[in-house]
Length: 192
Image (cartoon, rainbow, N blue to C red; front, side, top):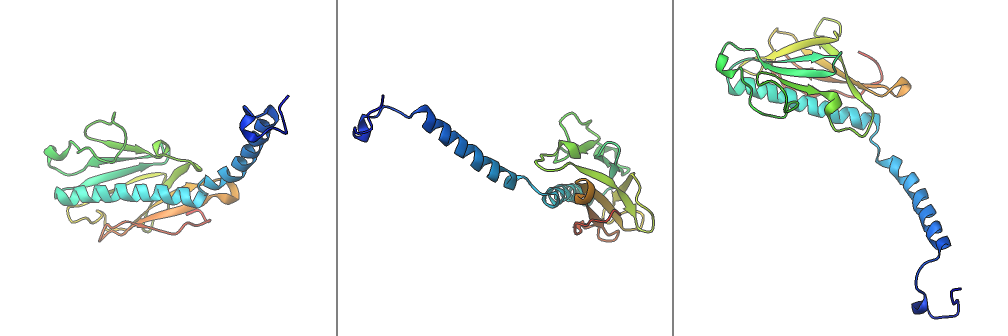
């Protein structure tokens, strides 16, 4: 039996009850704090939109640097997008290594899957691609030309979504045809 009247230096350890109380308190604190570190739907969709915008900018940069054409094809069914060289110079068909996709990609394609992106929050999906004056399509592509503009003479919007039910949010990535510069729009509740 521990000596309660003895000085603290004489005690050899903690009792089982003391350890159980500490573990219970740590469990309660952890359960209160941990949910605060989960990204919200808004934070998750904005983070993924930034990654996709950076990949679009990379594609545009390749087109300008190589004075050629590069395409990005978006596919809702696979929740992915693919970078390819679309110009006439066969030497540019082999793509440089870069931020796109997996190591197993063929040398002439860079495939990026949204499901492969690091994520702590809700899954982000490709809703579709919208060409100015047309409805949103589940798949589609855009091509950047040597001056950085988008081929086709129409603005393009890529729509992403995250969440479910009333928490579902959408975010547009807007690419004006003339400049080709990517703009991330505001998160919204309404589907495109």
